Image (cartoon, rainbow, N blue to C red; front, side, top):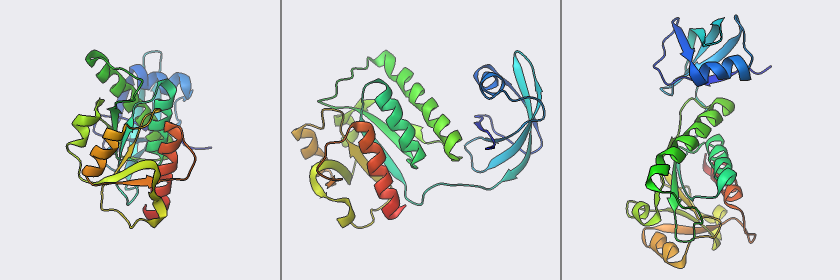
Length: 237
């Protein structure tokens, strides 16, 4: 049976007791159904992970004690930044989840010309926090101890002005296998369901982005995210 893993944002240390309340306690008590004496792995995103044991469980909180710290990391040698046109609903959730499982280091959700999602300013932080929770859960599941940063949604035009090279997913681009290993970090740009506009493609190319094709088929956003990150990790990660 696989040992449960849990991210705790508080700085951890060996052989200390921690009291969990709210969402984290609910997850251990109700979702995982852990009881006193159960073992788990905890990490704080600062590197490595700790053995831990449940010491007490009640209706309001869960107490656990950390044990030995292990210098364990599963990070890829290839640093990747994903900029992706925001897709609707669960498609974007799925894209973030799979990107984290495949080792992405940062995600930049973009509002592009053909994007069919509109986010008022007062909703942007809510969505970012939602996607950050998905990223944390993906780290817990996949064994990662470093939490990728999910940035606030921003317009394509504001994001592209700070870029200097990367890969742009485009059915008319060159084959991924024909390219040399990129300089790190690799910026990967993927359009929304409607694709990037000709002006956005031109703007990306003017900033040093290379148009790269994964084949002749048109992929959904979430499929393109998984396929492209899987491809660069196989080749260079």
